[in-house]
Length: 67
Image 1 (tube, one colour):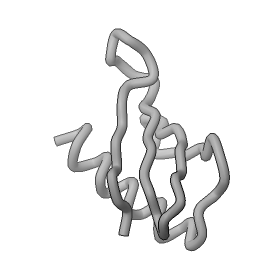
Image 2 (cartoon, rainbow, N blue to C red; image 1 turned 90 degrees about the horizontal axis):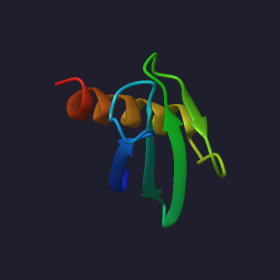
Image 3 (cartoon, one colour; image 1 turned 180 degrees about the vertical axis):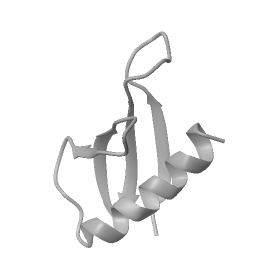
C-alpha cells in the first residue's frame, strides 16, 4: 500500500502536460512524473513490484485528477 501519496502540477499554471508525485512504499520514498497519457517516469529508484505500484498510482491519479 502506498503511504503519504502527494502530487502537484509540473508547471505553475496547473495545466497539462503532467504532474509530479511522491509516496512511501515499504518504508522507502519514491518520486516520479505522471504524464497525461498515463506514462510514469521514475525520477529516483524504481519501487519493488513496479507494475503493482503503477496500478495503484493510476487509480489514485484517476480519482484525484480526472474526477
